Image (cartoon, rainbow, N blue to C red):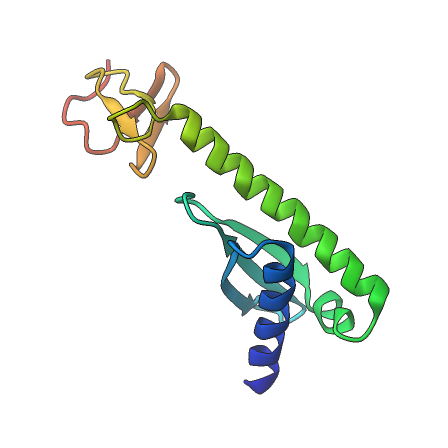
Length: 134
């Protein structure tokens, strides 16, 4: 338990050094215990980024400068992806309207970014859309 807390603090510190706005949302071991699922987020992004990392990489990064540089590079790349999500979200936002993916192919209403959708051959529609597609 203490080892996991130390790993969490270590990864959170590396992440904060790369970007003060970034937050470590989760760090958990995978089922076989050889890896960790790391989840990061930044403000303004509804969907964070999850990474599957080898547990050994995180352990080694605490004492090995090369492993630390590798982990920092991986976290930096993940942050770029999350920032890209934020940029896309911001570009979809119209003044005075919430951000949306596009319009429902059935009822033509905007589909908010946090809405669950059904992907169909003709396009997407929100799960809540009461009218079924053709």
